[in-house]
Image 1 (cartoon, one colour):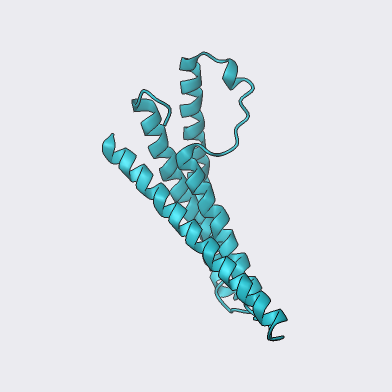
Image 2: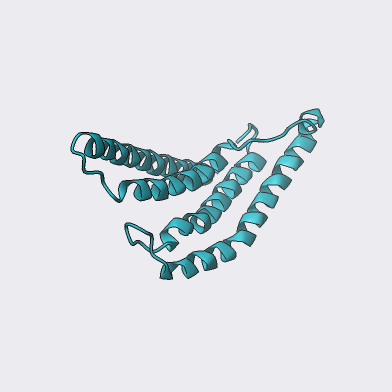
Length: 160
């Protein structure tokens, strides 16, 4: 179990680092845009598009990061009324459903992303697949994080 715990923790830390770096980059780019626009009267043409695309990656990576902490929003009206054994069963069942849905979405998101590679963004001229790729990437990452968290939850005494 220690390997699974370390893997889960390591992936979570990598996701957090990636999101933090991406936020910092977006912040710097937006600050540079403000300075260029209002101080030098020469705005950056690519900054808005770049920030929007990085923000898409931030949101999807955040989804995977929340999976390792069970940080997604839940509606627990019925769940709270169940006995602990039933709560454990429901948690595991929900994890398995999440993994199944993500793995079902994966090939469609991957295919869609690849089809977008022939289109280029308006200003930066990067393939639009860069914008849609985080969906497929997050399906894999969130499935893995959910699986690891579920395994830890099943085999450890305390809540994973």
